[in-house]
Length: 430
Image 1 (cartoon, rainbow, N blue to C red):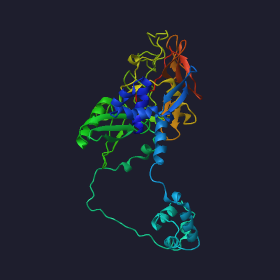
Image 2 (image 1 turned 30 degrees about the vertical axis):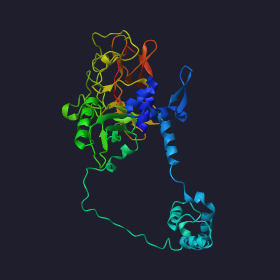
Image 3 (image 1 turned 60 degrees about the vertical axis):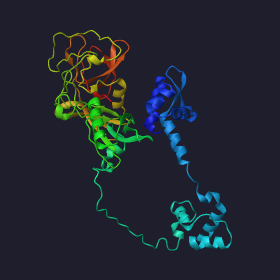
């Protein structure tokens, strides 16, 4: 059982599904799921915010336990069974004899030896013996032979998975997928796609493990999840998918499409929201002001506006129907804005970009950055533009008449009244 399957078990146990239901979802026997769930080592105790202690299944812990048990499997080293014979050979080799001479001596003197000289050499190379290569008279004098094999008719299967960008390997950026097949004894197959950073999985049943069917399945996923996909095939049809928010560049303009950048695990848009459903032209462009949980856009140029609503919008969170972000994007939560201001992982500096004041946020690990222009806000009472600080909404409400947001001038702030007009910088919908 793989980590992605254990993640599915964890997810459905939280939903309250039975072991039999989970087994049907995974396509395995209910006893397989039963053994996994009944193993006490795969569970942890957690304390909820209300103080109640609960016991939950942890997929990461279960995978670690499996790997530890797997490492203990297999045949044990022979010298563990015959330490006396192994020590006898070691002593004579340290005295100047070769391993072959020491083993032959042991046989003549009726010392029990159940390993060959090749096995003894392997133990030396692995550092499992007191004997080192320096104790062997000819080991360091010999030049190793170089066997160069030229394959004239090597099949070309496309780009190797080893040629993928280094950022994919270190799992610091969201949006890189890899895939393989789960095949049963009847040759039924499931295509498994796993996102490398979050380790989330997408499973699709396929009838044939062929290139054309995989292309067709991935094409359907592209439409379903709004993916921009690049496929690399190797000998086992291993896939790397590069996804981006929004619709493909070929079918839309820059007003609704943005690649975004990942900062501290969150993919942020590189431009402010302009009219509902569109982005501003550049990273330093102002875009529009919005009141919390309202979709009406207010310009950032006129000092006074007509029709300003100074009442506080109701609701516990910013409703989806009122979200002005383009397709594939949404307003960030308070937790996501806190990630942007986490100084241990994100650096920020006040700067001027193309004559526009603002703050630049940079991911310390990857070097990715975004610029948030400081545009001021529209006042609660009459919508008049005031201030020169940066104010950006989150979708999280504060009890009373406020809501959380990202506020900055030279330093970072926290929350503001929901009737204020402020900027919006979207995050990607995963």
